[in-house]
Amino acid sequence: MIRAFSLQKWSDDVDDLTADETLDALGLKCPLPVLKARKRLKAMAGGAVLRIEADDPAAVIDVPHFCAEQGHDLISDYRDGDTLVFMVRNKA
Image (tube, rainbow, N blue to C red; front, side):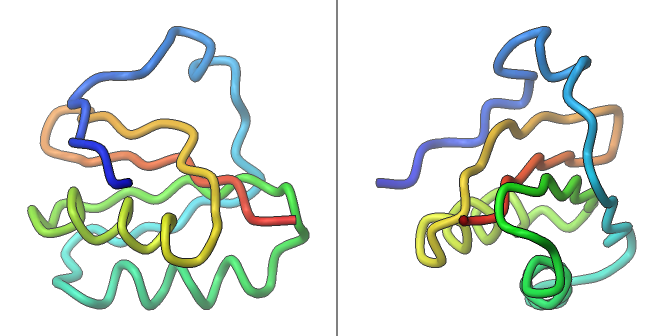
């Protein structure tokens, strides 16, 4: 099941969550943010957290779908100004 983009942090605990890596996908259009995320996650250890920053409106659909299909945990998704932020825990 894919849930709707929240447009806000799921909880304030996300502020305390530290990403192991950050993917700057600003300016990239579909499907590049997801393709770059997939490549980055493959190189990361299981359980590591990737912060994805994007501004492509399609990312609100693409990133959650990608996580659901690949088994990654979408910890949080929110908007920070014009930037869409996704916190993804790599599957173990």
